[in-house]
Image (cartoon, rainbow, N blue to C red; front, side, top):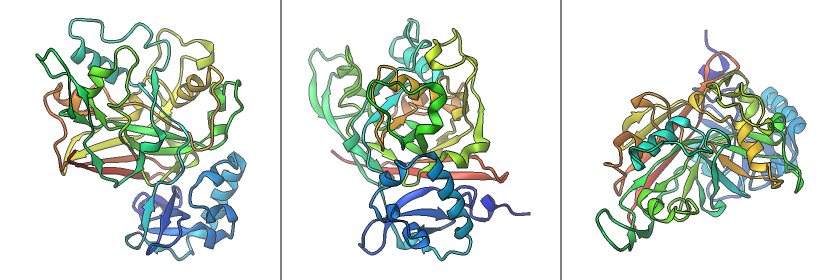
Length: 373
């Protein structure tokens, strides 16, 4: 017996992810994906917010409107005439206000620590006490399918006494999950751990492209800068949290117990599976359920100093890695720094999760081709 998810290949009535599309060079409009078609939400509902060229107007309306809209669209979608995906051009689904990336996988952080600091404690003393992160560059977040030009920067090659400036020799991918903020918060008021769903609309697949040699030379003492800020790719489809109701799961225990503002030591994450493909070869399959810090804790940390949220804020989980060799989320971990992305490489990240109908849903993929410097 088919289910709403399986009938449409993971993009069924139990999913209905949101995106922005245009047809034949026309105006950009908000739509939802159903199978291999796009439903024009302005035409379907007549609502003004869906005539906008981004999702931001809709995102700002908040959880009750999100819920009502999902019910309305779900009731209309099955009988609606869609636009074939092949005839549509997909765009960045929302205007990114701020971008923050975290370092929430203990497996990833420990693996990188062992590679870069052999013989030393792999995790910094603060790592199990707070979600570590950095502020990225919102203006270089791009939609899936956008080519990524190999960045140039300053690096110091092994054995060299002085740095040089030139294209990175260690271009890497990072398989992540991104979280999209809808409802803003006032300055000076932290968002509590329990208020995650009051502010976060949904999730996107995310590839935080990284130039490891540039990053290594520039990161002391202030952390990532040009080695990260050249490009971050996200899926063209935003999966609403409501479509992931069946995907919530327990994350590994946290020891020591986090401070109270980060919620209880027993935390919940998402059972999202990731597949990393480079040049047609699947290299690894990490799982978000192996992360240490939860999505709600990332948001609580992000705002704990009173930093305000804005509609369109995006925060990434950091590289998703698990305990097994085939569950590592970047090439640095997979090949211990011996293999990176060549010019012309095509990277594709695919995501799936349990759906509310009983069948898996397929999140929007993230792809990009590396172009020469």
